[in-house]
Length: 339
Image (cartoon, rainbow, N blue to C red; front, side, top):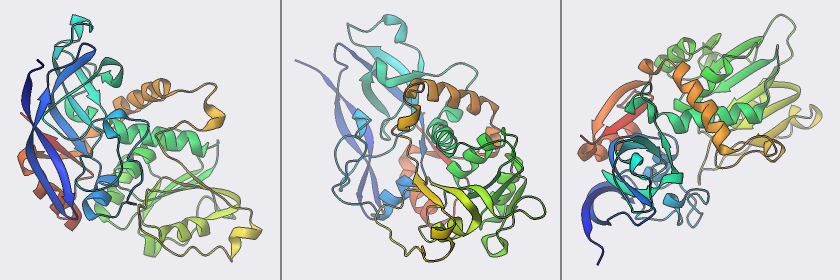
């Protein structure tokens, strides 16, 4: 008979309702690892949509991640940035796994079981807290792969939340003409400058001017604000044959988009980018393992001290979500701690 143990898990029980409760967890199967969580990161974009109940009901949570199977409906376990230590392993798993630090795309809980091929070892030169940033840096890497920035281009990023800041960091390594970030919060505009933006401006002060004299709009724009209405501003910011990459997940939120102006005649391209898959035109050379390796490299180069400014005990998770939703927490990345 398989023995079980107690595990504390986070549940979204309804709009603005979060609870940490005790479940039973079976001992690891023959091909599984048992991991005790040390820290997990809150994704302020998608997790706040779930917290507010702004998800499309019945939609699959993530068909590419086994731990996130099922559909969006309450009660829901959600989250995908857990880092911990392997404390036990099934009989078919190499003993060397025990004692290793690993990252996993699993919901918030103080322990979990998973297979070895579903975790990523965390090297000693990356702290546990830094490793919780991996999903955001991987998303930023995917956004840049999909946007295909070219030398000398003028690029605008709308939104300096966690993903916007990580994307700014990755884009700053390119020889662009100018990298502009548009963000309403002054503290995040300053972070964007710290992470490589040439300019960071308030949306009310952004007149669409990018690059040198005579520049006719941006070549590439990223919409990462999470606000559907910002898509209009993103379309207005690009010039002829410009590209708009939408990395925001709007959930059930809707907004009117004005396509009757320059959009049609200027041959503007609008495309989605989502980290669960690799763009079809890249799949011959890229896979998720290669992308993750690149994300690790960018994480090591990232000034994580400016992002890792808030830790919250797991028992106080409900308060963390409330404060994030009320914008009482100004930190771009909030880490739940378990020990």
